[in-house]
Length: 191
Image (cartoon, rainbow, N blue to C red; front, side, top):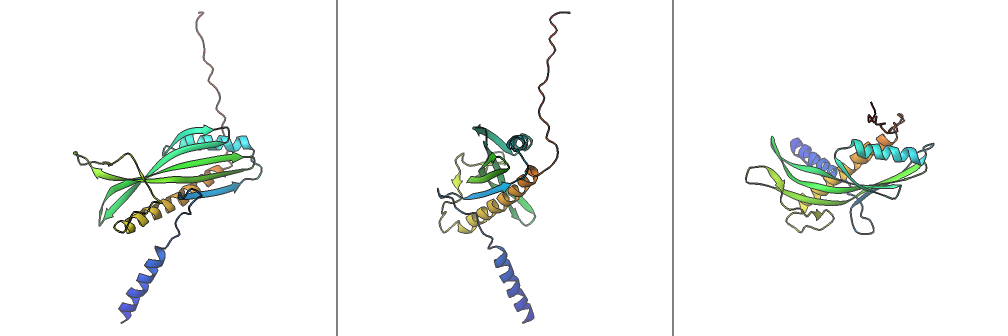
């Protein structure tokens, strides 16, 4: 009887742990993680330089463009692993877009446009994307894949929260920022 109650209590705890809140939807109906951060005594050019250095140093992000002088857009991906007992293999990847906008003494960033691309084995046994076009994570998958789809959404939620924490720590760093100095070339035409 005691073991039955213990197993029942563990089941309730496990169900409660899986009920983590998913990312909210924006006005377009897409999953989004949005945050505004205020940094006192930080001018706009210092924040811009920090964002530029973050994109330059982070190899998982591919910087697309800078829109104007205060908005940056980058794309990234997260590989989703499926684990069975002791073996694991990638089951797909989640693509996302990362936006950063900077103003004087504050910045905002958001992560959205989550798309899932499933993997399949190629003829050499490697896991490769099965299609170049991703399925949006906010799309309803139907009854058959509902539990797996919720797991992908939870993975995207935990990834977005962890990514936001690391980005905020980088932006709050008080270390001196090095301004790139142009290299002076020596012209040796006259010797």
